[in-house]
Length: 607
Image (cartoon, rainbow, N blue to C red; front, side):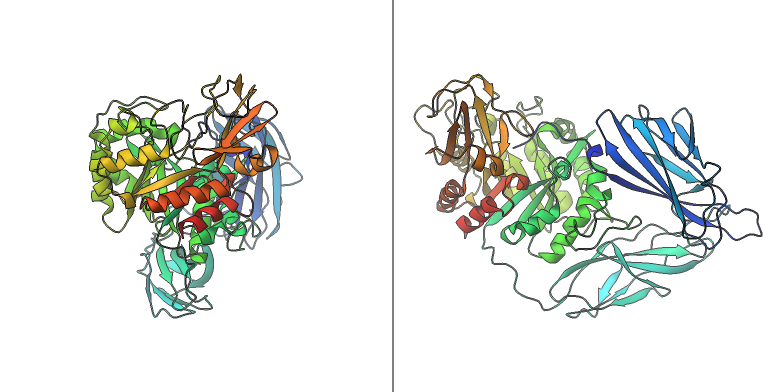
């Protein structure tokens, strides 16, 4: 399942830290530290409400404040309160009113505004200084990043960390030690022993330096540490059980990494595909940076139960995945690039596959989250064939791309791909060298769903994820069994094939017969998109009334839906085991019930 649109990042509240420090009133006077923090408090599509908060973090009083920032073209302030806001082009300036300029140490003040557009502030300055709480003394640069810490003397409850010193033009004062993105200690030495840890648990450590003017430098590379002892990991069996986590699901769907814990799903999966990274100009890139690594989580929203702070080096989904892996060390996470919407860049990527692979590894191994990802997944829809766009890169391009990725990532990373399940003669499986590329991959996610749906508005009605063919199926080869058989015939080992399950249904309206094969007038209403609905909704709104070709269908009123249930998933998993497949995967977590009944059915069926 590859939804064709994504919700804009502005739906959720933004907490984008832009720190600042007030400059010296005169050379003989001590600097007064202050920060400015921006939040998008409301979003109504065409506009939004923003708020800046200025806080005096120093020891002397602040007598006035001026906040400056840049908006991208198309974003502007339309009205403001509690500050005088002016602009010059895309540069905006807010000055205190006569009654709210003075701030005692520890005090804070806020002003708000209504805005048009969807952009976020950049290049924030507070009283002429940058906004990270650093010094504005001329020539005083922040310190460099310390070396990536090494770990030694690891026990059930402690670990000793050591790192190479940072450098600074006026001297390093101390170092912050961060565990899973949260500060646990400030030390003057280049080593620290962290204690009070849980046994048999994964942690991630980074370090950042502070200079004598209290400027913080960039965070170091991350060091993953697992304490000794602990209990045995969940008995997940020898089959892959993989689910997709969608980056945009944190908005309208309100589905977060913690939901994997509260639903019980985390103990029943082996892998997560984080979807999607984008492919632009032949390069891998993070798509929604706010959702990925900047969105702040409160204590009750986070996996660890600890609230994010404005100055921690990593927040968002990536930090939540890090916390999930610490809690469930058996889970591996892959960064998935492409999908229906972002597959248009793969053709250009294939023209210089080595450069593409290097760009992907740079994203996956970014030092801010290098410990989060265990591999990469490529979702090219479709090589040398048509999806949202048509690709003409040739039948060898996919194999070339996979070979380059394996060469770049090496044997210690997982390299996988989500591929077409078109088993028809001369169809999409025949358009690319999936057999030849298999040698470079750990497995294929065969997308054995979306065969039929209301993209053919008049029908005929048919199950979107049939396991087998059946009399009257609208298109020969459009079923799981034919797709798997074709891939095996091309030389793909059975253990490198995962069966795909949709955690959603596809449906029509204007249908007059309950059996498959009826005519329709269009797509049935759906919560997010016409013709598509989550299983968690359909199980109650339109319960299954029959089964065909190993999957369920439902007829209610004039609507006709097809979807998988725990029972049909059980049958599909039994079939996957009989075929010697490597396991199963599903699109995507948020379509399941709050107690994870579909994920539980996959887990139970593959044991």
